[in-house]
Image 1 (cartoon, rainbow, N blue to C red):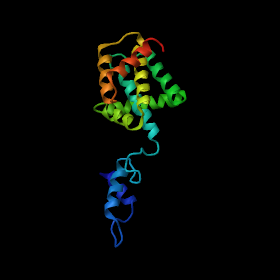
Image 2 (cartoon, rainbow, N blue to C red):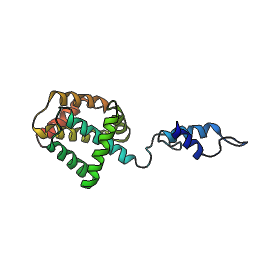
Image 3 (cartoon, rainbow, N blue to C red):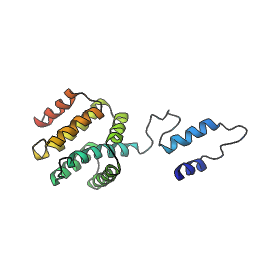
Image 4 (cartoon, rainbow, N blue to C red):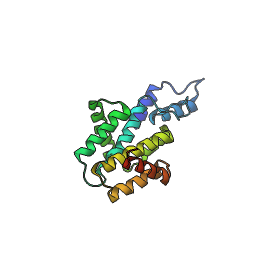
Length: 176
């Protein structure tokens, strides 16, 4: 509520002879939720790249810990993915992992992360995410039942087909 009040105060006077209260209220609400009026709320705000990377990293972390053990090999694989896919330095990758871990711990489910990815990634980019998730799964050389469940759940959340999921799995398993 305080944040909304701050946005209201920042937006200047809402009332007057020539004010357009409807647009101002919409602008206030959109700014509070991180969207802009001019683009219809569809385009992410500045820094959205960080949010998308954070969302992907949260999925990586969830996959790494879903089997009950988060190994050093899995940590190295996630850092390697963040450095390679997103061009982050080792320090930045570590900071992103810490931020994603906090967001993941504060969330009740994975939908918010999948939603960001769906809104900002192409189908091919989502397939890359699935491929990276399979890389994390197979760091230890085996597929745990919990990892299998989560992969199928993410297939649905990311609006991908079962064939696409299996194609990425085979790509990772056969090193294509």
